[in-house]
Image (cartoon, rainbow over all chains, first blue to last red; front, side, top):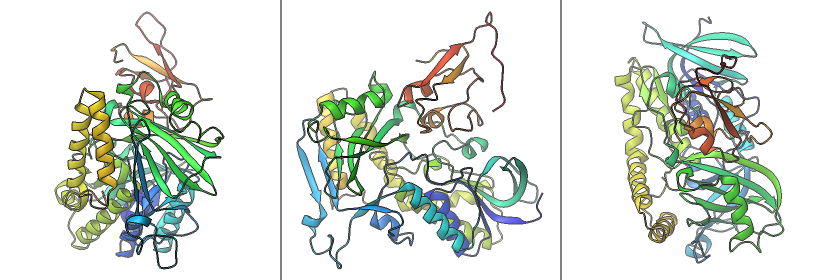
Amino acid sequence: MSSKIYDIVVIGSGPAGTTTARVASNLGLKVLLVDKRQELGAPIQCSGAISRHGLEAVDVLPDDEFVLEKIFGFTIYNQIGEKKIIDYRKLKPNEYGTGDDRNPLGFIVDRRRFDRYLMTQAERAGVEVWLKTEAIGYQTCNDGSCEVQLIQFNKNISIKTRVLVGADGLQSQVGKWAGLQTHIKLKELASCLQFVVDGVQTDGLLEIITGQRWAPGGYAWVFPKGHGYAEIGLGVARTMTQHDARWHLDHFIKNSFFKERFCNARILEIQGGGVPLASPLKIQYADNLILVGDAARHVNPITGGGIHTALQSGQIAAIYLAKLLAGNQNPTKKNLKGYQDNWLDASGNLMWKLYHKKTAIFKNKDITLRDELLFETMSDYFSPNSEYKKI
Amino acid sequence: MSQKKPVTFQIGWNACIHCGACVAVCPQKPGFITAFDTIAVDTLCDIACMACEEICPVSTISHINISSNESTPKMQPF
């Protein structure tokens, strides 16, 4: 075993893990970041939408390296194609637009490039990064630290750290190691599929299509993807349909009010994923361990958006840990609760509120009413006056 | 849907898009996973909730029932 003791070891080099690592290193902690993959961001399980504010709040400037397209607003459709347009270029023309003194509202990022960029920023901040390194377990030690077992190119490595940060996504094994209640119900995990396509026009808006007919328990989307490409996808709750996501996506492309628009679509990439439309984890910490990002289920329960929330929780975690460890306090379960409390204050409580709102919508047995409520809630969520802004 | 008889899962790799949804929904203990980020194959699952089969966006997970009078398939560590 290496004699080195890290302040924190982060498992998983996605948006949450890299942000935790970078901010913690900037605050003086000794940080190791590991990821089992050889290339970050792939296989892509995400549509790549993030607000400009979400990036700027964690000091990440939009960069050509990862920005595929600038976004200026939203169009929300009901199932027969009636729409509500929320275009910030028209709502606040002095602030939003393409001119030098105008800003976009958000971006579609290339997750392969975005995750690599975030890792680079972490490395430049002093973080040690090991790729092709899988974490397989940990034990707490008597001296208040813990020991983490890793495998790197078939070699077993054991390292010591004061805190282990699980940033290993929705499939988090780290949370399971700690015995945290991480299980997600089938009805709260949307089964998602998307195609990156050529031959479909877009106009700088994220298009959200609601309605049981196209995406029972979820919604469909058409997002601009840069270079003239688009992304067509949807997520469904499998408890609300007999068919899989692939069937629904095919049905949506061939039969929806967009069938003419989609008739020349040529598929360039196929991606999928499970997107939680669920509550955050009730307990996101244990002795010597915290979870951030998707692993803690820091995901918007109505939109499934999780990049900005991951960046934010990484920052909150790093600031909390830097303060705790500088104070010579042991990172016990009791002492780590403050991380979750800080996160709840910053956005978690509103996320819980949104979760209850979402649950109430889908409890309605009347499909027409449910569709109307979802359309209305989505439209409110994306409006400039939403109380859930930044969640 | 849910059944109590233990099963082993099989994955049609040709259709798998490595989306990880099956692992995300799986209530099994840690390590019930392959190197390709899917639920474990050729390993007995005694929960048999079938959530992994249902969540799969491309329906490429299937299972074999393992009853006491059938031979148990070769067990593999994860």
